[in-house]
Length: 201
Image: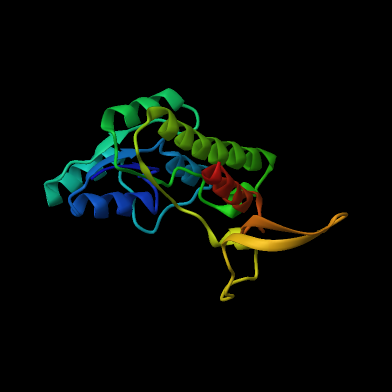
């Protein structure tokens, strides 16, 4: 299969790209390297040293004999580059990790909150719009978060999906279906609950 991994330089994206490549798939990574910039901003480092992307790709080719393509641009800002890439590659699947990764980061300041909302929502919306506009029948895989269920729910059997509810109205009870879960514990988690509405529409 041809697979595009959005956010393929990240904590989840990089091992996913390697696993899929090792399984024989044709992999293309798109990443703006924002995770690395955020680590510099936070004066934090991974316990495992993270080498530059060019070194990572070279090392992967040396140990596996496989090539992973890399495109550096921002999902949510460079829409036509994304659309063109989908039209040219015609991927069978897109794995979408191209969102800001942490709830605490979204709470640091007004700027961080606005960055998280803009980055996460625009990225997901543009991915969906580009898939539709391209006409390519792409399967989309998206990383969610437990935080959409709210805090303090670990270990609970929480239903998800389209739940039937009864609403009391002036004309009597009315049955509705609502998309659940939608109980975010932060701005970051709120963007993840919005993602599911984007997928629906």
